[in-house]
Amino acid sequence: QEQLAESGGGLVQPGGSLRLSCAASGRSSGRTFGFSTMGWFRQAPGKEREFVAAIGAWSSSTTLYADSVKGRFTISRDNARNTLYLQMNNLKAEDTAVYYCASGPLTVTTASTYDAWGQGTQVTVSS
Image (tube, one colour):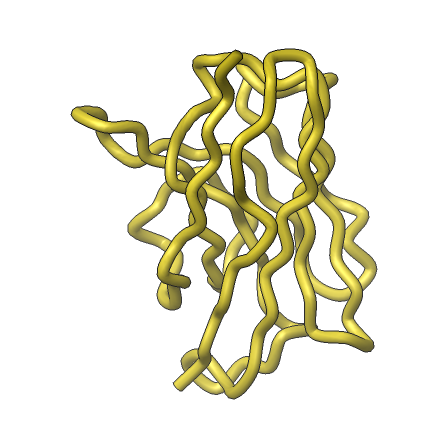
């Protein structure tokens, strides 16, 4: 069973930056970290979980972003460290949410495709 642990959340002012990390261990459906697509999702109070970004396996040449974060967020991965990152710049109040990392077999935006999830880290953007 793959374990995912997010960190790096916190309180930041509008326009500020944060970098989220997700440390992975174990296997998900037989896949090790390098063979998995990794994604970030978020859920704001009273709203459904939504896709933020995803990065393909290994060479990570494939990335996907939600329109709302394009140009502000960057997803990356370090396969040697089994770690996923999300660099978030120019943060806005509407970015406030619990952010989750997830592991799956396909580079897609659909949450149900991902088969391992972390517990989440809170990001609050407020002055």
